[in-house]
Length: 224
Image (tube, rainbow, N blue to C red):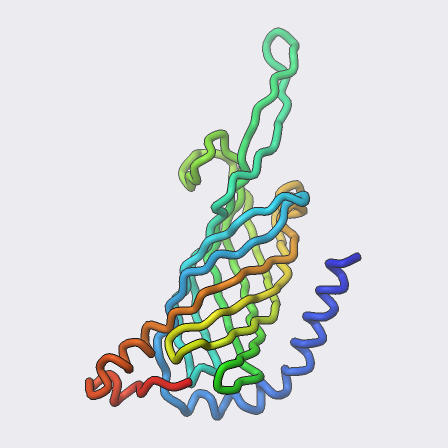
């Protein structure tokens, strides 16, 4: 029952701020843009087992109110599943395989509340990729195992606290929905996701160190 409560909560948040997003979107694009580069690690569950998904993000941020971009993510953990096959003698052999997946992601993150140190945003992420079972533990996209197409959609909410102009802490909560052509794999991947982050804003560090550079004059200065 808990996942449905989370889904309903995220739906209400997304619907409530949809009008605000549309009203301010035009004004946001009038402001300066900067590069958004992130390394991410998200935690979720498969059959009550904790797993980790790692990713790289690259995009554009507008006045730190809107971020748009893409990236790639892959399953970092080893989730084992037993498969049973009948051998030539008629006996049942047990084969252990590890679930893996990877996908290209596309994200948009809209900030609906911002003060000097606090920030709340609604991130929406979608992705397309593949999932499969392989015999070896290390991630291997070219293992030769049969792959299933995967489509993911992850709405959520994010909170951030800035300690300095260039350093902060953050957390996000979301729910991962999957559409797939392999029912067994897809059912495993539907799950709440969460992460805790240490935010290092490299562009703000640059603006602080080089306040008179051409880049800082064009895109800066460092701001809260």
